[in-house]
Amino acid sequence: MTSGQRSGGLRRGVTLFTGLIGLWWLVSLSVPAFLLPSPPAVATALWQNARYLSQHSLITLTEILSGMALGVLLGALLALGMSFSPRLQRWMMPLVITSQAIPVFALAPLLVLWFGFGMSAKVAMAVLVIFFPVTSAFFDGLRRVPPGYLDLARTLGASRAAQLRHVRLLAALPALGSGLRMAAAVAPIGAIIGEWVGSAEGLGYVMLNANARMQSDLCFAALFILVLMTLLLWLFIDFLLRRLISWAPETD
Image (cartoon, rainbow, N blue to C red; front, top):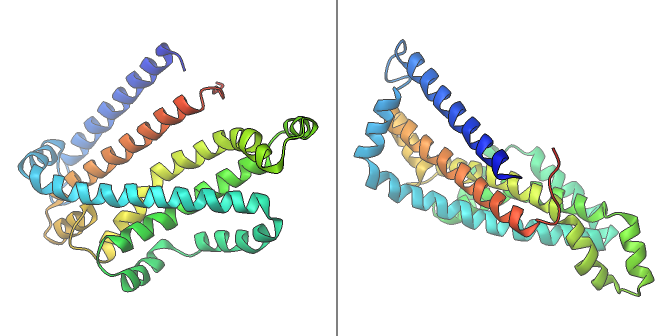
């Protein structure tokens, strides 16, 4: 991506954000404040509760990053195992798909029951949300390596391990990158659902508590921080991937 394309994307993003804020402000003029607070009211809530929100934001961010690290590790290991063993693939792939057929909200109370009200249940929930996109994308990349690459490696006498290290992994990195971007976008969902079900800390708890007290401005302030956190996480992952997989340029 050229500097002109990046600057154009930044301008479009700023324009879209400004337009959404303006539309939100116009709608809030005709809606009661307890239903839809205005942007200035949310900004005031952010300023007045900055320390309170920062403490809970740090907890949620820790849950998200821990869940993402563990989910990516487990997903990548399972994808590698299934690419090596067709028998493991036949047994595990139906379980992976079934895990996504169960609503996340249905599993949250069980995880809280098993792991308690601490951070473990929220991390486990984030792992469940992240696990599938990483496993699916990476496994798809590993089994879609161009046959010519593998034929050349075999001709040169490369062992199966060498084929994996020098051919399959490199060819599958763009697909893994897609899974990581998706994981960065959905990782907060698991943590927030876990905090909604049972927690006394985190942005999910702040939102739930503020909603019960009809403090919609504080609820929107916590939601704004969560959205900003998700966007920054996605942009950071995207930045790293562009540097690590620079040999696989994107096409328009």
